[in-house]
Amino acid sequence: MIWIGLLLVTAAVSASAPADTVPRPISLEEALALAQRNAPAVIQAEGQKRTSDAGVRAAYAAFLPSLSVSAGASRQIPTRAGQTRVENGQVLTLSPEPWSFSAGLGASVDLFTGGGRFFDLRQARVQAAGAAANLVIQRFSTTLAVKQQFFGVLAARESEAAARAQLDQAAQQLKTSILRLKQRVVTRSDSLRSEIQVHNARLAVLQARTALDVADASLTRAVGAPYLVTAAADESLDRPGLPLDDETLRRLALDGPAVQSASSSLQEAQAALRGAWTSYLPTVTASYSRSGNGTGADFTLSTQDYSYSGSLRLSLSLPIFQRLQRVQQVTQAQVALQNAEAALRDARLAALQGLTQSLGSFHAAEERVATQTATLGAAEEDLREQQEKYQIGAATLLDVLTSQTTLDQARHDLIQARYDQRVARAQLEALVARSL
Image (cartoon, rainbow, N blue to C red):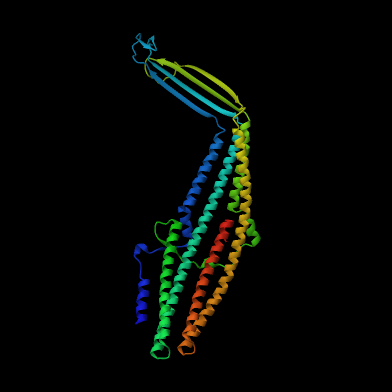
């Protein structure tokens, strides 16, 4: 019979997969922890922060003097005393001591560079702050992406459950239609329409299963796991309302990671402009060097017979004309500053825009969840009544199928509303950089 074949197909669809392809359930906290370790964007942001921190240390070290040491030894060939050789057309008598040695120590420090080192230090510290803000942005962006994939898996699983419920109801309706056809109280068209509904429900199950597999693969990629994962059920995700009022969320959004990153870029551009102006100031440098030289008959590390000399040097340099290069540097810094100011202004407006949109989406989705929950209950009751009426001949199959379609749509709308509410909350959390 048709319904027996249907049960066999359903069993085949729900057959267990090979063990190596069965996804491992993980909680949302586990998914986020994996993503924070494995996400390429987070890894790159962490590397940028380490690089910026190294730049700050190098900027501090620029205030220290540079030191250098040197040492050398050479041996003349041949080495017999009194022998001669010709070099550049001249006859030279070789020294009785074939080895010659040298050693030196040097140090230099920039006493004044027009304040450039101070501005370089400030710029390096601002860059480090910007890298830290960017790391926060990437962490919350990754968190948002993972949550969307996690919620997508939950929605796909709910859709599969709804499709299987639709298949069960369609199979039951087919059995009822066949039974009433045998009783000759309905026409053949009722069983045919019921059979079509069964085929549609089977297709819906297959599509929902495929969507769930794709969602699992997307979540696995998002968290960077070496094995297939899936989202574990979590009833705490659908907590009602928001713990903060709209005004508090607005203040947090205006101080969110995106705004802080734009603010750091502005401070960096300001420091770069001040640094560009220092190229018009003189540079004062002090240096000291001491060196020693000696000779010997044998190779030795002793410096007792060295003759030493030293020098202390103070120099001042003031570029007069550099073919307008300094003008170009200042102009570029001014343009960068204007761009940073515009970017900060836009970041603040974008934060307010995103807050307004996400708040509206959250409240609308919250209301839709309540509405669709009531709609689903009403649709289930209506289908039950229509099925009972059909069994006693008080309703047509068209009435039953209409109620079934309404119920299927109510299930789909409720799943979508839950997904939209969860995503809207995650978007708000990414915007204000805190859990809600």
